[in-house]
Amino acid sequence: MLKNIWNFTETETNEILLKHNIPIKNKIKNKIKNKINCMMLFKMNKFELKIINHHKFEEFLLNNNNLEETTELIEEYDKTSVYQKGKKKWEEEWFDFIKNNPDKPWYYNILSENPNITWEMVKNNPHIPWNYDILSINKHITWEIVKDNPHIPWSYAYLSANPNITWDIVKNNSNKKWSNYHLSRNPNITWDIVKNNPKKKWNHRELSANPNITWDIIINNPDIPWCYNSFTSNPNFNIEIIKKNPDLNWNYYKLSLNVTWETVLDNPNIPWDNFGLSGNSNITWDIVKNNPNILWEYDILSYNQNITWDIVKNNPEEPWNYRNLSQNPNITWEIVINNPHIDWDYDYLSFNPNITFEIVKKNPNKAWNYKTLSENNFNLSREEYIKKFIKEYYFKECLLKVMSKRFMNYMEDYNDIEGLNKYCNTPKESEME
Image (cartoon, rainbow, N blue to C red):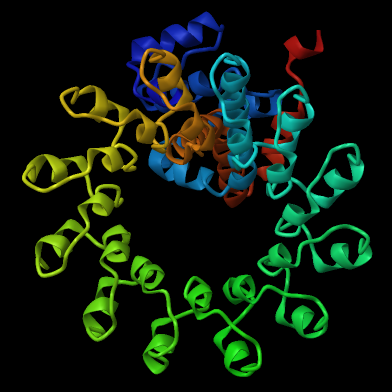
């Protein structure tokens, strides 16, 4: 709405101002000021209102009338907190949709693991059959929550893997049934902790994938039965390690899933996995076309994020898997409804990150799979919602702040900041009555 006001005609802008008894500046050079007034009239405090009506504000706006530049400056404001506000609003609407449709076959075991589930949702809805074992690993569950709610059947096995659980918490609560298996993959477990607690039955497969374990640690501790298959998933793993140690039991599927195409070309002797390469987000359609010698797996390629609807349309002879394509992040609801001849799979479409709960609400007769809907994080649709929220918030809450702040700097440059403060802090006669 606010951005639209910027594009309003002079007549449309004046109508809004007149409706709210805001004086209209008739000179051509004041059109920008009228629009700022129009956009912010419902958010201005007295100080801001006076700044906008200051006679030098007109000159300032003529020299600072670039909306895009102003929008960029707005980005300097507290974006993180605004993002969290938008995220919270989305979460509330999403959960309201679940609560308001209790007749749907939601999978509460899976829903308990959904990262969009917050403690407030759980606490305020005890009638929902939450799976507290799975909920124990939810990143929103902190140790304070666990301590403050002893009546809840928390799983200390799953809590052991929760990133909010530290080694100090484990040590100070040794009477709890912590799991060595899950502790081994907890990102708070460092090599020093492992070394200093040799009597703990650490799970070396999980420990090998722990991001605190480096290759130096592994080679300097050969007495430990490291799992090289798991270490392939470790963020500290790199291609040089495998080149120097080709005989170890590496997981070539995981390796192929995360390398660049340049790395593949530079290392033809490595037994690359076609399934992993086909799902690799670095593999583009041009790479696929230009390398027909590779046995590309079209079942996997169909949900590769580099495969767009245009590619599928323009290459109908390829053995696309429309079931997997249904969950491809490039497949939007518009594409689905505009191509009814395609055998879209609603089990997989229900997991598509573009699907919103609004789409599900408006299309109740579609064969939605509530198990996969319970699992769907709605990542893309949630981010779009938050982007829109941030944009609206910035225009509503921050545009005037940016402009008035810049104006105060402008007045300071003119050595008239004292005059501005005096002007803004002096009540008008109408305010004194």
